[in-house]
Length: 142
Image (cartoon, rainbow, N blue to C red; front, side, top):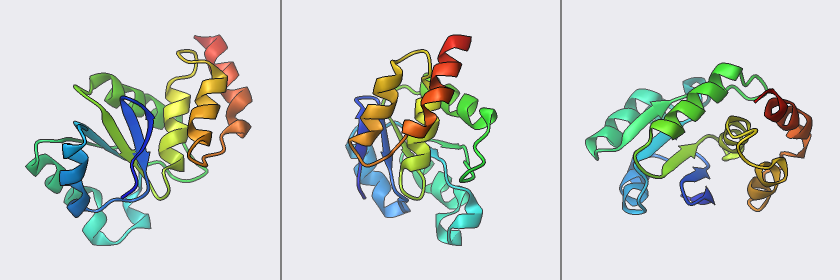
């Protein structure tokens, strides 16, 4: 498991498995967001299995599957709502952490500088520069 803290309150990671959840909880995360569609992963990592494991540890588990190359505004809205509702730091995962970074950046358009929304994930190898026009446009819309 590789926790990549974009901010003190939001981290991303490549795919985790139930055995990783105690360490995630011990690191202080209270909410887990699964950005990976079940169709991409083996059954033991599907949403229901991960939800049961997370909730058994007292973690909040949110499923917000993001299909690569087909992210929707609903995905962005759901991510923002989950972040806003969290009672502590949020841990989001997908295949590599990239989709969880992209949906985070889009959810914060207009709330943080575009340079930060691109630059922070870049520290972990996530290249979001292609989103600059979208982030700027969303920021202007308010």
